[in-house]
Image (tube, rainbow, N blue to C red; front, side):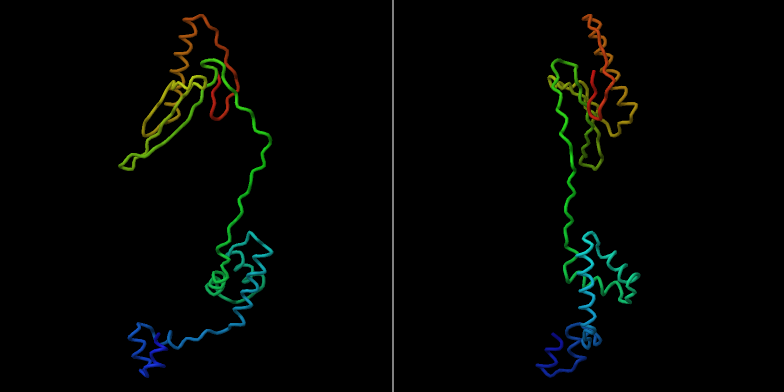
Length: 190
């Protein structure tokens, strides 16, 4: 705009720069080394085509340390952005899984329990934690512990209380409990 004002309105460079709040050195700046910029662009395109996982950092280090070019990082990054190489999206890696394990369906009460930890946040920003124990057969909540902190001792105490009540009930009804030794991350089998 300052150059147009000087050219069309015949005002001085100093006045035009003051009007548009531009320094005189910025007004007089002319881009240099267009051939070098094209060379940088060619190198960047080649590097990112051959090495799809390389970002700007690796491209810059390769050009600077391996190829011994003396271009600074700001210039290389400006061209990297102009080529829109910074907008590449990495493809998601898909996990190859074998056939998933079939879910067991309990046939009676107290055959399979699920335990789960949940959390939520209060209006004042404090987090609360929940520990839930559910019977998978009838979806009955056997126990819920809620607090700001749930250390392992508290979790073990909850499980012991519920197991104790189960043992009392089984003894009262003359039922023998046999424990399965296999425990998965989110299931406790009894």
